[in-house]
Amino acid sequence: MSRMNKTFFIVILIIGISLHTFATDRALLVGIGKYDREKTGWSRIHGDNDVELLRPLLEKQGFSDIVCLTNEQATKKAITSALSALADRAQPGDKVFFLFSGHGQPIRDDNHDEGKKKEYDESIIPYNACRDSRKMNGKYRGQFHLIDDELCPLLDAVKRKLGIKGEFFVAVDACFSKGIQKDEMTDDPDGQFYVRGTNIAFTPPGRITVNSPKDFSKGAPLTVVTACQSNERNYEYRYSPWKWYGSLSYYLSILLEKDADFNRWRRCFDEKDYSDKGIFKESQHPSIEVFP
Image 1 (cartoon, rainbow, N blue to C red):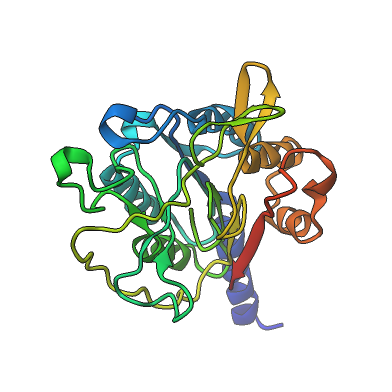
Image 2: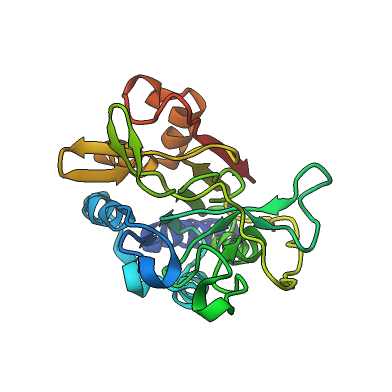
């Protein structure tokens, strides 16, 4: 090998080692439990417990850039701004984990991008979103719902920034969540269970103008896991008589106890490793989708 080729090889090797050495593990955790029921109509759940559960486990696994938004911090503007800031900070080769844990609700599909057989978009419910249009003195129009069409480009910006050597894992712990989306506490013969979201779709009094998102850009492999299918409720997991967690978040905490290997996580979801752990109700089926 000539001196020039050796020098070129060494430079490439140093660059590769540097990228690996300086890659950062980052996380954005959004968890809402204490919704203002009088103002918004949404009842108490325990999404904030999920942030409290997962943050120390992520730190244990080497995540050094962790941003948490809980309860009143997690408005729509704060969540979208945090995702944009995450994209700005992210560097090629980084590993990124994003969790939303809160209520979910279908919302009328005004741009008709969901197909002929589906009339509704999925949406996740920030702290300031209302359950129906009677709130805010009858002036609520759905402007604080975070619709899948709005979430998609925010996730895409992170995916693109991470590049092909990066990794991006998204978890949505809410009802009706495949495609993205906890309902109110209901009585059950076996006790009380918290459910995250409502199957009563939000129908805005006026048209919501949201552009249909484009396909995801090439970049980091994006894995999206949800607590249930788009037509299912997501029941919380009762860890103790006084402690509740999102079923998906609690299962992820089990995975995090061992490692933060997203490839292994994907295999666990593909192989339904969770099925014998008693975390998810028989009526809910977690989903996993991977976007290269």
